Length: 275
Image 1 (cartoon, one colour):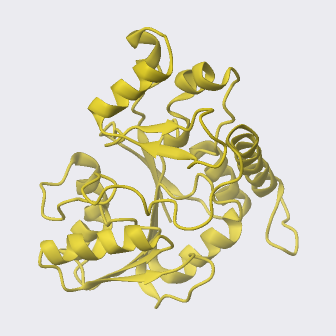
Image 2 (cartoon, rainbow, N blue to C red):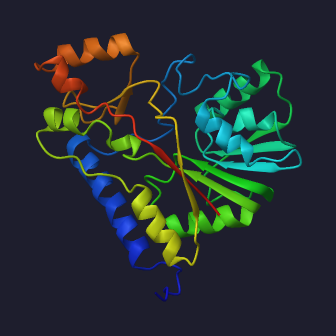
């Protein structure tokens, strides 16, 4: 299918429409997203920030690491606290994390320092707005779900990863793991973010034939993210909780059985596309 002058086609338009629907629903139910860093208020020891780069690799990380060579420079798009890219820094020449969140970037630097990693650094800023140095491998781990401008995003991944691009997404996508709970809270069906099917269609439309591999480990979110209820439209869009406080908050906020609240807590397979 021929693409338009902007590089977008029907699949990219459908991808953007899906993202727009999700954000419109969130804004209608919770109010506009508060300005500033959305992660600035999470505890310093939250699993989303803190990780051990020298931990034993799980089956998924073993496969991702198998694509990394000692001379590689890995450019990580939205790498957060470095849960994926910092273990790779132990196996390559350098890791550069392009991360828009200052809190996540600080977590990345802290984790690297704690592990004695000196070949990893952060560039703070949006992936499409900054100019990282070109690398040999570009990595995008769980960042495509709400990326509206998906074609420019992928094109930049290709430019930054001269040898290989690695993209991982979950099926079902993590932002839509709590669909049963979402319906109980808001009394309507949650709009679903784009997943691996939509992403693959965009890649095909761009003339990219990805090598798709389903990773074996059913990854689970380390910390539940609970949709903000109707307690205040000006509050944060998400609330991160420990397992114990999450259960207490759910029980205090709604009257339903434990089976109903856990029915949507599904861990999905994680397709990985490389090209």
